[in-house]
Image (tube, rainbow, N blue to C red; front, side, top):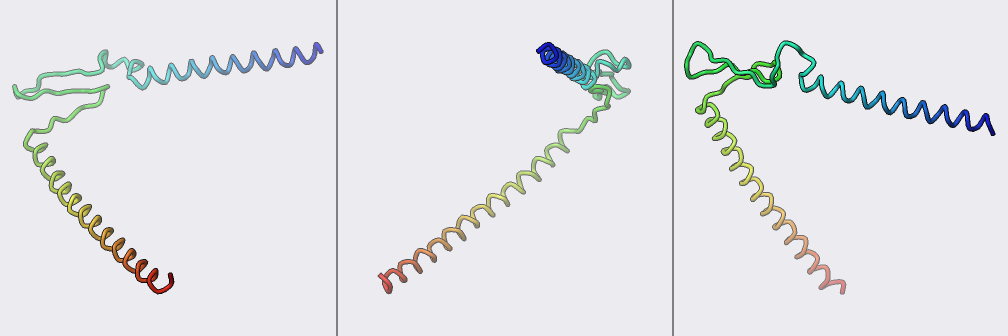
Length: 117
């Protein structure tokens, strides 16, 4: 009985020490992912004014962030809208073909019912 209790106690201690070690590792990994372990910057987002007065240099978690003009974003948005319209047209065509196929199958079913019912 003493041997059983010693074994179970040892297993419980090993289990809980593993849980605590795993929680500690997860905590350290989360801190590292947020960038707090990197001492090169103190804030998550750093901004500096560049030589041109209307532009800024932005770093997010130590990585440079590129500024994109509004015109480029507008062009990207318009391209997406064009492809969205094509997708809507394809979806409508799919619905029509599906309706046509179902109607044909229903018609054939009705004809078979006339001859075999």
